[in-house]
Amino acid sequence: MSCYFRHMADVFAEAGIDLDEVKADKARKKEIDEKIHALVGVEYKDCPPTWKQVKEMLADEKGRAKLVKALRS
Image (cartoon, rainbow, N blue to C red):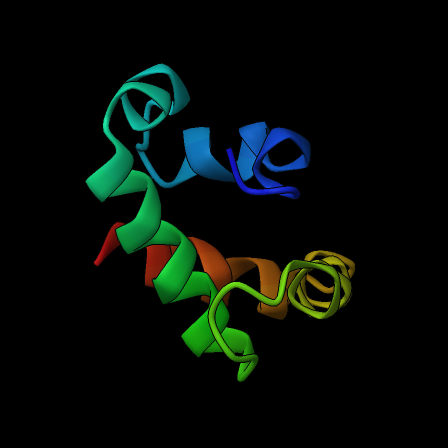
């Protein structure tokens, strides 16, 4: 899993994403990870700055809703 996925189980659940399925499907994991990186504007595979941006989004209701919506699409 990406370095921050384990901290986002509730967000993935809200978005309707089963983390067990994602763990088993490397292509799906990469797709989700790339989507999150793009959403926060950080180059793919650069995990620590991505997690920093995601944490900031999760601290705000609107940011969290935006993240959940992006994961659903």
